[in-house]
Image (cartoon, rainbow, N blue to C red; front, side, top):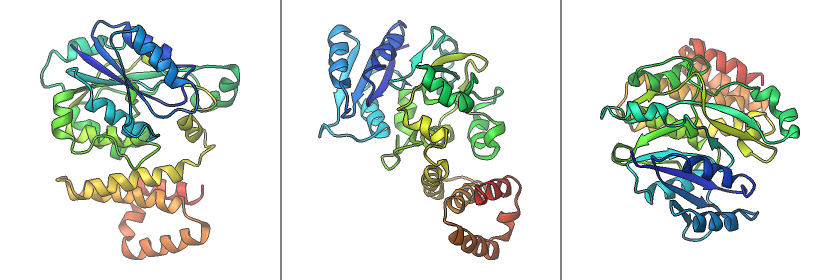
Length: 313
């Protein structure tokens, strides 16, 4: 196996060295690609030092040296990757020694196009733990049971909380089918949740298999300045960011060859978050509109639960 590990770097001078070292511990890691995204701290200097120290570490920036976000940075890393497999790692997270244990065996089967695992939580400070332990605790980010590859996409779309989640940090994919089947890699229009949107679309195109689900293969670093931490803890209202996520999925599904009922469900989820994020008066106007034009969708099981949850949030 020749694995290219893609690490987007923004405002992570304190953490990126640990991320890189955690990836370099594996013989299978062929290269570590750092994409520095115009950090306001000294992350670029740290990245330069890492590239000088380690022959496997390659450093890139966007052509205009600007800040473009994690999605475009990961795209740039994928475009410059030369390994047979692609793995991802956020600059403030790190791999554990068992990170590729399942992948070594599963990828012997050429039908396996991707493998996902479980992610743990590491608090970088007592202050971060005090603030965010009620949100994350010591729980794994994982899929709750092993599913066949054809069940991963519908599981994420229909089952939501009962299916579980897997993180971009615990995902490894074959580069060839990724480049061949994915018309668009990470969305450049999303600043947040672009990894969730990517994983959902990826599971539609590629056959993804479960790796290690009952123990962490990597650690999510929680600190005060992590933007997605602030979303999950509701410092940034999650409904407003998820409207954009489901809008992108709704637009994508409309152009894909998939059953109409799947497209309709994705559209209903988009409507649910759209209503949940609307001002009070607009909410009731939207409820009246959708109730008159699509009464069945308002009364349908899981959608109705999300509809009511977002309406009164």
